[in-house]
Image (cartoon, rainbow, N blue to C red; front, top):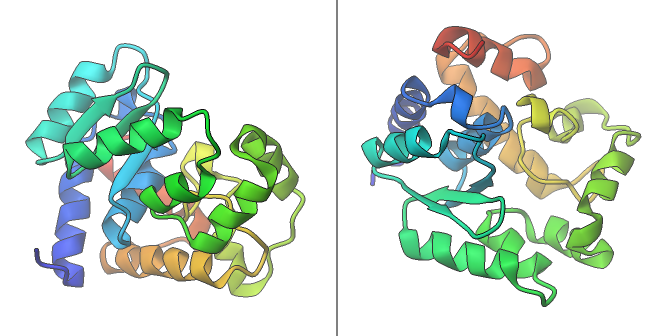
Length: 200
């Protein structure tokens, strides 16, 4: 597989062109960016009601798989076996923050951080992080705009100066800079993508 910036950028463009925007939440674009820019192999998302068929067609056209679990989540990736495994881990009643975070491509330190709070409290952690102060280049790891598609990482960082999270954010910025004229605040990157690729 060609991993040059040009090839990765072509893949990102291709995935954006046919994306059924009305079938996925806005946060999906952040996951898709990390899927292309980093080594993320599995995306977990929710499919908007009535969007399953169009998302499945989009995945199929792009040589991806879609696996919808028995709950509310859907998994997108290259390997169906990885998606089934991810779903199985996700639905386990045993603590699985470390294993599941690794499957989703999150930094180990951030997985360990969530494990100390448990997955059941992840929404509470997200709310707490709205008060965190991310300064300097670490503003790139601020996850609070994720649900609106305005973040560069798709996980909750373990701290306001998490270097592995920053590395993922910079990979995303470098990929985007090859294609788009980014706003002064790179966290607003998706407004440019939404405008260019037709998201209302």
